[in-house]
Image 1 (cartoon, rainbow, N blue to C red):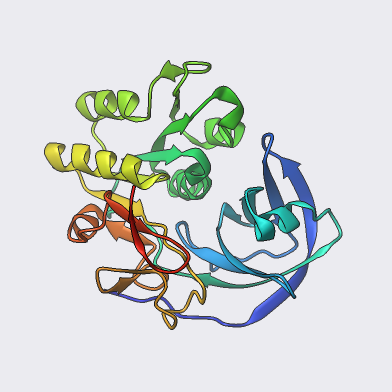
Image 2: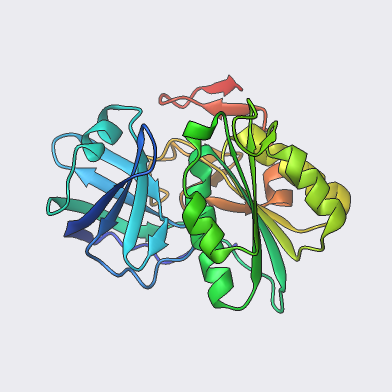
Length: 267
């Protein structure tokens, strides 16, 4: 398995723009065109005196992250405004890969998982590949990145658990139909792990290649601390992107996660 170059250089740049995505998610555009960053990779955001946190890359030009205000570090990041400075290192991790001569792909994002999916869909469109997207959220107010996705995707399908927008149910109500009706060269998923598990299962039944972006607690981002280990592999350097078969080979996939202490917990 190829591991991508590890860059521990710390960048400090100004924030160009802060965009309110919904009631708790903000997108932050940084004054940095990180052209070498690829869809599926992440950066480590550093707040001196507070801590570090990995963040998926939502765009590379300009470098963009999206942050949900759900904890101490994310809450502090969400307080930042245009003109403030932000420190970070990266990009890290193994990105998504698109098969040669691919014509159509499907990206599936649940909740905040749609962030790297947009980056992938945008890159696919720039390579003259038609991306289709399924976006899922608990309610309409939880959905993000809708307008950017409609701008780059051939079609976008929306689901909400309560039916407040799009089709009622989780993403699988659309994914199952699409896998039957259309031909995709590869399917990509990011979001809650149980969601990715069922997407990967559906692809396996249809013999369609699938890649998932796994999330585990990351402290170093470089494969040193071991906190993000999953069945002998490190999510930060061997992933976060894994093929469906690599994910299924991990006994934890879709069944267990690890807390901040590294203890395995059932979903």
